[in-house]
Structures are given as C-alpha cells and as structure tokens.
Image 1 (cartoon, helix red, strand yellow):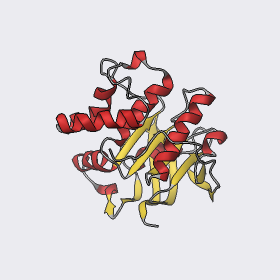
Image 2: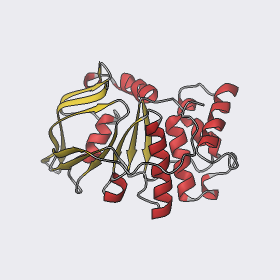
Image 3: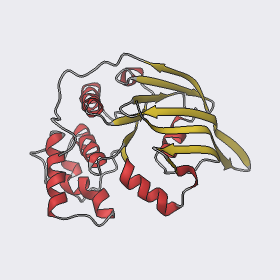
Length: 242
C-alpha cells in the first residue's frame, strides 16, 4: 500500500510564560493510502498538535513531514495554503459552519476561497449534500439543523476538493451516542471507498471504528496497533466522487 503521509522525528515546542512546552518529542509515523487511524491519548499527550501539523495548520520545531513525495515541513505559508486546499479535508468537533450560509453555501466555502464557485461546482455541492443525506435540506441554515446534520455538512465540505487525506478532530465530541454511530458509519463508508482518515478521539468506542489506533503520551508514540474495526451496517453514500 502506498504511503500517503509520513513524519520523521517530528518535534513541536511552544513557549508559554517563559517556559518551553515540548508538545511533540520526536514522533515518527507513516500513514498508508486508505488507512483509518485513531489518534488517542490523555490531554497534553500531543495528539491534537500532531493533527494540526499533519493539516499544515502549524509548523514543526524540527523534523520532517512528507505528504506524498512532497516535503511540506519547509514550505512557505502560501505553499502550505495550497497544500491544504488541494490535499486535505478538515472535520472539526464544533462543525465551524457559517451561520448565515445555507447547507450548500457552507459546502461551497473551500471553493469560494479559491474563486472556483460556478454552476458546475454548485451542482457538485448539491450532489455532496445528497450523498450525506441532506438532499431535502439544501437551503436550511445551521440553526435549522441538528448537531448530526451539521456534522454531515462539515463532512460534505471536507470532501468538496476531493482531498487525499481527511483529518477529523473529535468529530463526534458534541453528539449523542446514536448520532455518533451514524457519523462514524458515514466516515467508515468514505474510508471503504478509499479515503484516508486520521481522527483524534478520546473515546474508546469511537476509536473502535478505526483500522489502527495510535496512542500518544507525553509527546511520544506509546503504541501503534492494527485493529479489527467495527465496520458498517449500511451506507448512505453510493460514491465519494459526485
């Protein structure tokens, strides 16, 4: 299987009130195409810092990060922005939807930033909304949607650029157990269709959906284990390429 992302001896230090906080202490990991990885660990273990570095939202203090064959650890801000747009889709715990935008308009946001919104991309966003089960709510705004529906909008938005990697930060953190299962089934369906997913979670029952669990502690990898995922009982996605 092709390695789609890898980090080598990655460190990240923060300076807080005159002290150095070592969030990552020499992390080396690789992620294969089609992988579904859960990053776990207690608060302060470095899992969210690692996810931010993988998403090119921050820069490492030292070490190297390769996305495909590109060394992104030394890229300029403009280059990192281009990488984020072209290769990475983000799903956040708090959804990060724009309240005055409709479902379709929220899905369009990454395209809007690139100046790529037209009739063709609007049709693509509508198809994505339909694929995540929101075909009847295209013109609804976030306040008219449940938490699970808002997260489905966020998932569709993460797919709009057909990213190589989807990064999910506590994607079920604000949801009840039934809705969490629905969101995880959706992510599993995307993974079965070939999408690579790296997810931060502190919940064992959510990590159980992944194919691989990486546990972190004190800025280091404590364990890295392949698992037998729960799998999916059904699919609301016929395809991830509308």
